[in-house]
Length: 426
Image (cartoon, rainbow, N blue to C red; front, side):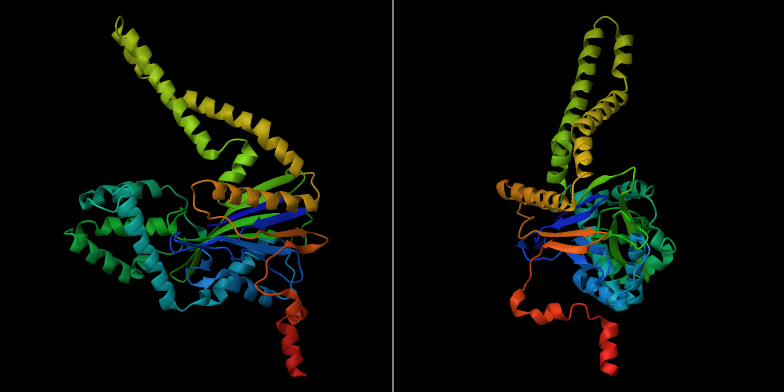
């Protein structure tokens, strides 16, 4: 798992990340991962990665970023969002760094994982893999189809037809058919519904299957204030890259301070809002239960003398009251915690931005260490600071090698591919 935070104001943007990397569904945790990268050797733009460390479960993101950095060379783009489009185009031009067979296998593995873990275990078994009742499968598929049909279509793959998508799932559908047959269930009875659910699920915005979170941050040539774009990148479907921009953080004269937590956000949101997110959710649920129970008690008392009035009381819609409670709670949190903190962030100097970012990651790591949760945030904290005038600056950075023994590495850093080609031709 990962904890990353971006803190922006008019002076610049600070990015901090831990070094924990989870392997094998949380069985093993290493604390050596690099998650922040400068995306250009010459211009103030960087990238951070969380979620899956590999693009499409195949190519490590650090390799992609470094190849992109070499490819773009000294070119400076006008806007930060141009770097987003440029990176996406680079991935597509390189044929997703894999051959067609590997990409199809990756998609099929995601399909099988989605079917076995989400549909079978989570939706039918409610998290329990034992004693699955497959007779519930048709009903569950209809429920999922109804839920996800309202989700937005992802623009990058909106042209992929259902027929194209299904034709690329031969191996996955064959394995699903075999699994169902082994458990005495006829695949034919749910074939059409299953294909529709898979097509909708893998072409709409959702969080059910594996993806990488990528943040592109910094400045374009024509921008004087920093920007950060959070992307969700899944992989290739029928020769098209499945991705979209999840969030835009843009500093301007009306929005002068931003805190953007990524990946594990609970501790940072607690600091920002003054209340732990899970506790807030429990308070709202308890309030709903109390209101509902009070209505029942009033209706029961009134029913002894006036059954018609009691029936009217029981039919009262509590949602407007809950909405009022939620809105007032949010207003209290914003006025007492969020706005004062953001107003302070807006006037901090660059060095202070870096310190705040680092300490938010440290607090997340500390909480993981002193609670029963897995220590999925930890290790050295890398901190980068990007400003218009000074560019991309490392405040803290771990190296897998001793700097004093590798001066040649730093000496050749600014030699790009064009320089090498020119040197070879001389």
